[in-house]
Length: 230
Image: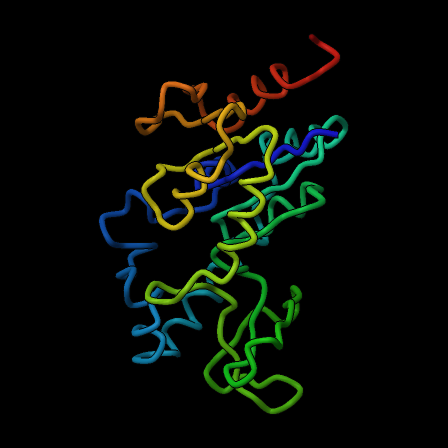
């Protein structure tokens, strides 16, 4: 079975009503991005950062996977599918994707400040955290998010997946956010590459561009990759 590796960005979740700061002029939901999404911001005002992510979690609960998320699951009938996502939401998992690697962390999780290996999944009854929130060991917790100014721990596994791809797909990303944007460079020569975005960035001539929203573009992608239609 061929390995299909899919890199997704904010565009795939936008149609589910998930807000993004990609085009927000430095603001996300009226918060300065560096106040709520940076290591310095968390060190300076952890209460603000906890409050911001509490609000994002509540918003996520009302969001549903869209047709693009669901169509990627359909591709698992024919391919060994791996999703690498820049998104911190859990819509890929809720749609049913089997293999999801989060580059920038996961909104519905927190981790110990003192022992980062201790990661906890929040449920609907326990969404809110504060600087006083403690885990079962008595340690304070922080959002399980990769802040600006922090390394991206999952970039090495992502690079490995990109280098092993038999088909590589990019969906809903501007291709300017690094290190995620660099994954395209690790795809082996000759491997088919597809790029879905309504406002696609400039890409090499060997990349097949589908200029469309995620839902419309993934629908077209499924037709192209469906071996039963060839």
